[in-house]
Image 1 (tube, rainbow, N blue to C red):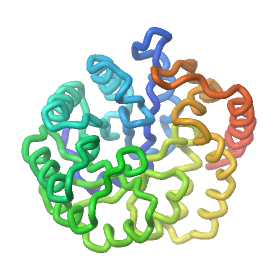
Image 2: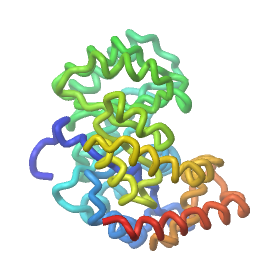
Image 3: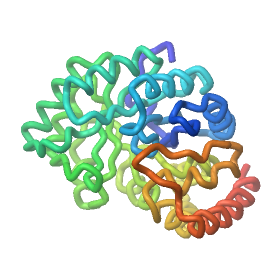
Image 4: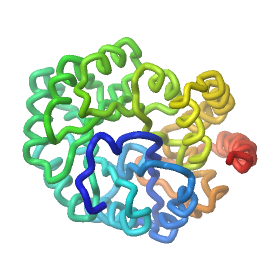
Length: 304
């Protein structure tokens, strides 16, 4: 993008891109292009490479930058690339952010610092310091079930007023916590659902969009759901989400993105490989997910 991204562009569906890799752990650029071709024209609002779904921690630094550069080159120029920064400490996270900015990212989705188990004051100071130094706008990434780190709503309220912090990916499944967050964040701050499983609930409670894993596979289904929710057609949106529950149970039955990568050849992505320490999905689970996805892809073809 040629202009600096703001929270106004954090609306709609952003697929949390899985990272196609070769058997030796390098970015499979042909498969990345195939994935982006599958997503093209589906109504997505941008993409999010290098999150947990993107196997950030298992990729080399050079391959992370290659992934962002490849996405930026082949994704529509007007759609933002929100690159994940999942390092546990400030100096590595800043270095990663600069490298991904140089590769073409439009914003950085920065994970809460983990392992050191910081206090709420420490979390607040970390993000303030990062946002002050960041070359790109920052989207806060809170995912307590992976990091054991939650951000207090009042801390998020303060962070939301920083001019270089434009939003958050909310993966805290505590809906009361979510309600308290959206109650006090600044108007310049967008809250994005990070959970395929409770996306409609978070939207109805104040989210402006979502960073969605299974939008890699079913982008039109998710953009349709978003359109229904934002046009007041709540019952239709909930019914559509309920149709996905069986598929979601299978997609997340083992560590993401293992199950999804085992079936995304159905959408033209020929890259089943995972990076250590992840291992191949259970064949029976994969077969059941393949069957469920085939049904949903047929239904998606009927969507306008």
